[in-house]
Amino acid sequence: MGKTQASNIICPCGGQTVFKQSESKANPGRWYLRCVGGCGFLRWADVGEEQGYPICREVMPALIQSIKDKDELAKCKDQLARYKNGNVFKLEMYLWITWVLIVLLFLIKYLNVEKKD
Image (cartoon, rainbow, N blue to C red; front, side, top):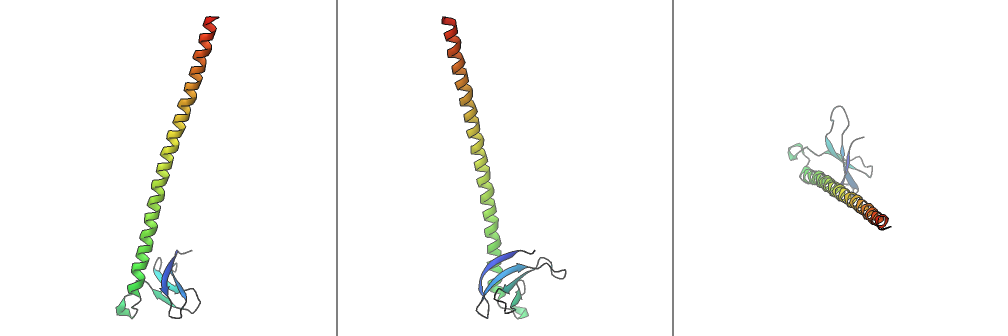
């Protein structure tokens, strides 16, 4: 199924619109604006004013910003995952080192008690 993005552009009928990505063979991957109210409104996002669709001035910047925001979000999520993975690794290492030190201290104490007897 094609991608869908939220839109803040209001349809001429007054309804809400969304950006959708075409899956048709004639227009694969091409973005368009569609009314969710069912009035039939549809405009290609890449068609300019020369084709009689002044809405393009609003559609393309909003679509590009939406895609940039998602890219930024993905980068932030990746960075957070790397940070968490690094901290989890450090915590595991500290726990292992602590466990080894406790065992060593116990053995040293136990061996010293054995020598005194």
